[in-house]
Length: 223
Ligand code: AMP
Image 1 (spheres, helix red, strand yellow):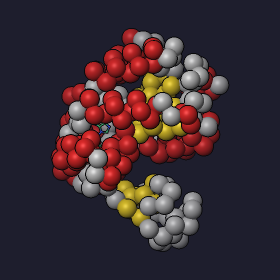
Image 2 (cartoon, protein in one colour):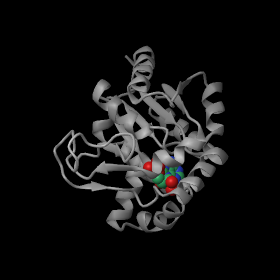
Image 3 (cartoon, helix red, strand yellow):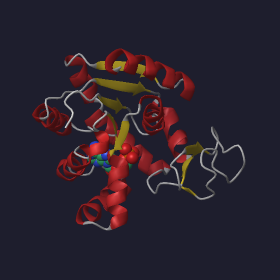
Image 4 (cartoon, protein in one colour):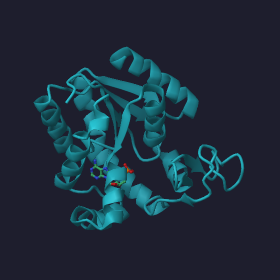
């Protein structure tokens, strides 16, 4: 295991753009996005015991148990393709997860390189999340109002023609997810501030502007 890989954390409520920006950081810096939401959705789809346990909680917009999330994440972090650096998207989400991450990294002689808080107006997030969909083949993100494919029904990036929407991207569940964020995840901003690795970005700005601001930070801390 490489001991100096950059470990970036993207913090922010649902709709802040964590997934979109993580994929751009993959392209720009060769880092690997680790989304616990994606890992959990894969577990649900596979019908594994962890997936079965997580399914109802995710559909209600609550948080899956730390035990399940940590097991899935530790497994993924140990895979070889992550050796060049990782972007944690949607993790940690609780104080216990943040503490467990510090321990996990500590055992590897690593630590969090930077935690970036994507700061948004909550009121706008329900519309942002409720209209979004992705290419079923490559995962490129789109939105009913803000970002349609250039040719209707065809992915700009890979030419795929199948799209999907998440079950939990409906207004009611988004509100529950926002509540979970404020109750359990937002306090982590202070945790990373205390560790001296916190950066804040105005994530109401354009996707391109946020990408630029993130690039400046990554170049500073991890280049
Ligand atoms: P996301 O794709 O990050 O929006 O996550 C979708 C859902 O997966 C969340 O609403 C939670 O139910 C669950 N989830 C994802 N990451 C975590 C985490 N770190 N801890 C607990 N639950 C999570």
